[in-house]
Image 1 (cartoon, helix red, strand yellow):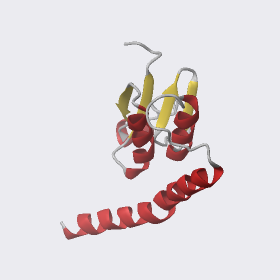
Image 2 (cartoon, rainbow, N blue to C red):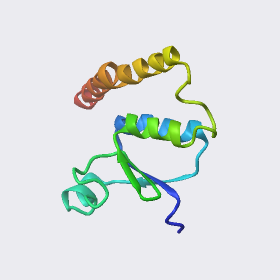
Image 3 (spheres, rainbow, N blue to C red):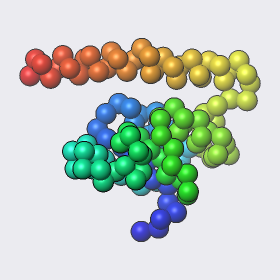
Image 4 (cartoon, helix red, strand yellow):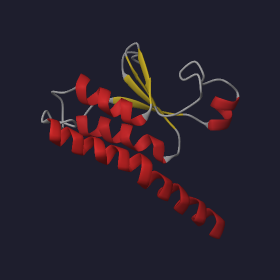
Length: 123
């Protein structure tokens, strides 16, 4: 395996979506590495990647970057000429993109988690 290949460490949850979306829209080749909470995080096998055991984490060369929105912003700047332009040059358009990124975190994610919990309880 080529160690210079971009890797995205993910779990089973919604927190990964913005990072996966960013890589997909940029058309970048990457390896998806599934992080098993019990086997990897609890047993400290994953803390060499992210000290707090959080996902997602993007590895791009020597960079290890966590937080989905930070990953997306990095991809938008680092790979500006590839795929979809994720962060427009116009300040007003960029502000609108930032607003939607925050809506995803602050409003959508809690509702998605609540819906999942309700679904699990009703099963």
